[in-house]
Image (cartoon, rainbow, N blue to C red; front, top):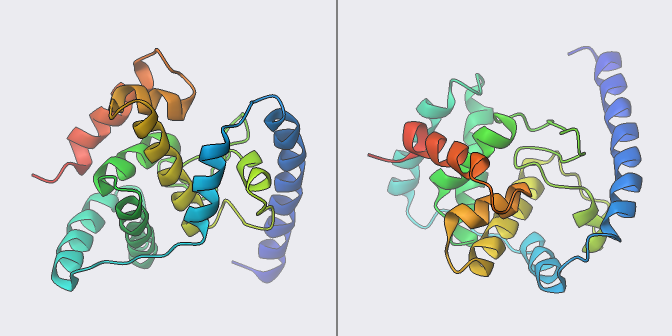
Length: 196
């Protein structure tokens, strides 16, 4: 990518982010945000973990990299995404394959995706969360930040719903009581990510 094009893209992204943050902050005051979830997100941002077993890591990364290739061409980027997904899903006590299915449905692995409602990145996190936890300097387009927050939010909703994955996924999507979104995630999980 040419330096001037890269700078123009970065500037455009920054302007978009700032505009959406202002709008999202205004929305956040109307959301009645849960203080417990806010605390969990703050703790998650400060915590790191990695693969416990090198052999299992290599097997999982190779298998999932082959599956991810249809969405992400560049091998190093695939490994970066997969390592972060594994890392954060294990930290949040989630199946990494479930998180991969959710990302497929949310953004098709486009780390720079922005929804019509302003959600950002792989797991489509709303920007107001950064302000809520006092980390407005963090970038939701960074894989680590985005996946960590998304996994923390999904874990919280699973706990809130006493392990009911359908309800937790619907909550994550903002469609509690509906089945379309949870069914899409489960279909992606069973079709592509579930380890057989």
